[in-house]
Amino acid sequence: PFASKSVMIKSNKSGIVKSISIPTFPNSEINLFIKEGDEIRAFNNCNDAIGEIFVKGNNLSKCEIVIEEITESLKIEIQ
Image (cartoon, rainbow, N blue to C red; front, side, top):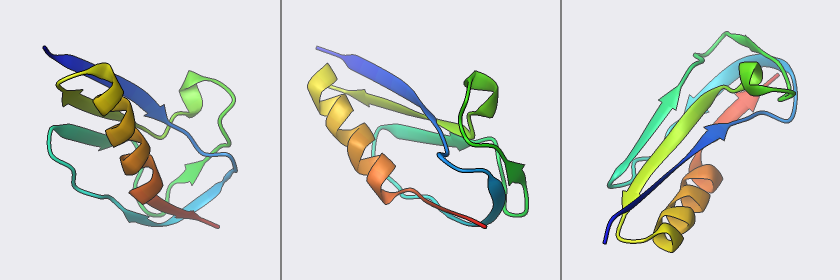
């Protein structure tokens, strides 16, 4: 069996990106649309997304677990 899942990366607050720490996980891609120094807005609609996570795995449940782990490990500091 094969499954994949993707989610948007969102911010719950507006501000300037001070620092970014991106984790590494097998069978996953993390694409950020921002860099340090960029101004971002709190998520209101898809235009406010700051990135995306894409994961491949044996089943959807495993993909969801890995996305949760990535989300918890991804650090974006906003001023």
